[in-house]
Length: 548
Image 1 (cartoon, helix red, strand yellow):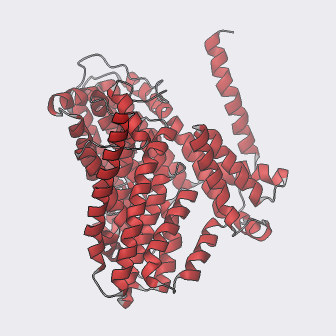
Image 2 (tube, one colour):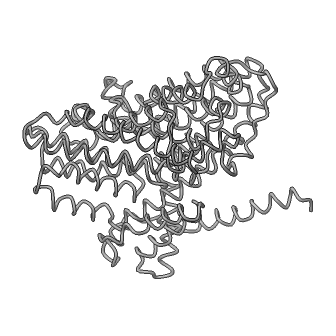
Image 3 (spheres, one colour):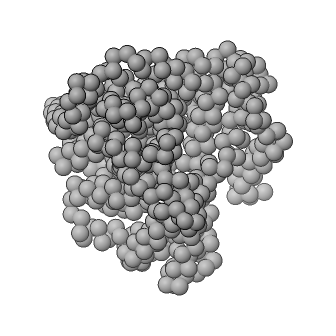
């Protein structure tokens, strides 16, 4: 038996056995959550947050994310089963991994990832990405220009954070590589223009999600009112621009950027080095990248408003508010892929058979992101069953009426912790926003209400930005084709700095709101403080680097 056959069997046999195991297991019963809530000694306690923290700490220590997430899932499954071996095993696979993979929303996202990977593979094979890189080399002359171009593209693609991460990454990788910008820095720029931009864009999947958590139908109006108070998102953009314009970095990112300038853009191994990307020199034109991307954006927007009932009589805003991002992006990417295949074959960039070979290549390129997503979703399932959200909701309700001036800062910090531990910002919205609106109805005219809702959203995005098990963090790593642990470790100091300044800003906003001073004054004060802190830390790091 030759080596290639052995290698294939080494993957096929375990995969087949695992698939058979999954199929043999019973589908998760609808009362699993109720069963765990009534039987687990750890339900609705601080212990419900521990599995996520175990996974996160292990990932940062070991620099290996797959095993860290799996250990977190096992800990959560053990807590849910009171460490009964059989039930723990059933929780890991049936109620964790199988349940997350069989969830229709998650399946839609996975299909979207695969199709987007195929489109990127097609663009690379046609030479579109290489042609854009040649064009950028002639028009973008500096590292600062390459980073600003990445930021601008990220801001322009505000429809959805998943779409943002993968599209910006595929377009800008050739540009940032030519200017010796580390993949970790590219991943940060992608992540900083994904959720932070979507959460302040009225026409986005995030606006639709937030609007859905308001019962009286005024969700979009409330979302728009919160934009000036969404401090973390706005300060992240201010910080990113300051770092870029002033050519500053600090923390682990400084080392990664130094290595990149010396020619090592990965600062170690490239997890995507096996992706096929052999393009003849000079092949392709810029239009081979730009046109499929434009068609993909249009198709995804149409797909999202279609799921929201636009073609059944709803107006554009209503359709976007009611859209299903999973189905919309899946449909949009399907039509985008179809267009790309027809376009490239018609242009004779390659044959139809070669086009079809790009589909599995694109799938393979997305395997690292898909594996991390499946494990992260499984961990979220188990922490949800353990009542982590119920525990945090109780903490909020217990303090909602006291010391109103401190409430925005407290809600922001709790939102950070909950989103960080669970890896889901949308889930955090769903927990905190109804609690805040019950305590302080925004229709009552109480100015603290708008500020507190904005603090919920900002805290959720901040925790999501920091968490290694967050979908958006994982997508950013995939978009930049960067080691996931490297992305998390280099981004964390920036996110924590921004979180600190945001907490101070919410403290000011709460004091202003309670004393009937326009709370929006906290925004310019926070931006000035953010710029000052960023410049100070960057220059201090540069000075230490020069002396070291």
